[in-house]
Image (cartoon, rainbow over the protein chains, first blue to last red):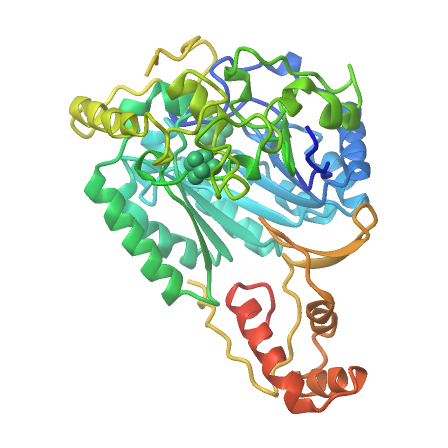
Length: 375
Length: 98
Ligand code: SF4
Ligand code: SF4
């Protein structure tokens, strides 16, 4: 393939899969890694240093819950010494006294805090953790007091979509610069829980209007980023900005991946940092090259004028729904099986349990092994 | 309860600066200046960069316009509209503080 090779700009580091919460939409894989599989401090620091050499300008420190790593201050300091912009993605539960200040001192640039609900009862129920909402509010206050810029992240699904106006008020009241209204992407645990998470069509439409109005009303006050729900879309999103194009992620054991769900594509084998350098993996790994650029595309993507806009959408969604990772993302109206999305929505809604009676598969080690979804 | 931020409007007296979550940085890999913000990286063109560099928390918009006009050897009206439009857009995205 003759696509020009671009250095990566962003990297998502999943430092650990451990987490005090059990969100049923978690983007982590179903097979969670235990603590003894995590890279040690020095290996992460080496990896970060290679990433900076390669051109990475931003690192998102995520998990699981990244603050469970006792060496997080050190990792932030290592990145900061290389001038890399650091964003900590946290659930904000159980962060010990003094640590947020220590992160800020180590050079943390920005903190992103997730809220499972805008109402305490929703947050506690979805994360399956009593009292978590209160702790998150406290984390937000501490972050502000430490002078850290703040994004509130709200993962949206059937059980909190009506709380979108309250999420906006919550983020404003916490002084956030940014709010992410992010409709759940059906990969990982969200795919296993899809039928329970799927929102009603009318609620999706209401949400779009509410967000658009708030974006206009709050220009210059708070940025609102809206991640629309794929299943209700006409065109897919440029997943990860294009496969292996300007970003990648690293799992807790050092496996380097083009995206969260890449391991659900059975034909691909992924390499671990340490077996090869980061530069070698980025440029040479067959898995990274498999869907890079446009050379791998079939019709209708191959001749579509949007092929360098959305890069054919999400490979993992194509795998999950079309059964072929090189197919057009079924979220696209040009996909021959685009109507499957509507069928999946209807099937999910037909099964929806009454509020409070849903039986989520909560995210925890050993809760399930394989997604029981052959769509 | 904290006081809510308000949308800032650009005037000749505004003193723009970069907020804490935004920084300009030279990228030796791509040989270009990048603007880093929480989710996005921007690659400003030369004129945008010249404006952003002057958002130092000391210079007024009026002063920035005069300064740029003399650097580009053109009259102030010619740059004023561009500078104000740029600052309005960046301020509305919370990338510049007024
Ligand atoms: S989505 Fe929930 S369970 Fe998954 S890492 Fe984030 S807070 Fe933990
Ligand atoms: S056909 Fe492919 S490239 Fe065209 S819009 Fe759909 S997904 Fe994107």
